[in-house]
Image 1 (cartoon, rainbow, N blue to C red):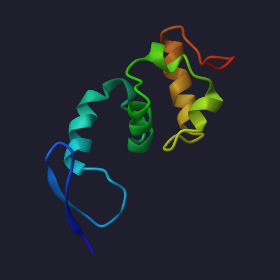
Image 2: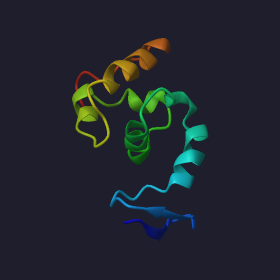
Image 3: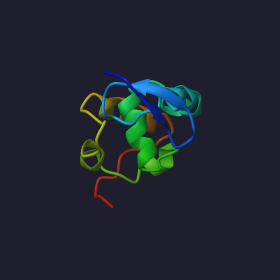
Length: 96
């Protein structure tokens, strides 16, 4: 059963699951996440929730750190690694 909800930005939408994602905000975020466009929506949200906006910020974390985040799976790591390599970066080998 779908219920009417209002997100923090004031958008109203109907949703049947408990996961609090506003579809209007999600569509707006697609254009903001151009760098990470090839990732799934959960992976993009995971990066966004950690405040990662660029590859330099991403390179501060180890692969194991990132795999612990909700929304990141093993298929995401090779995609992120390839992105980092395009600018001569890699994941942190030692941790934070």
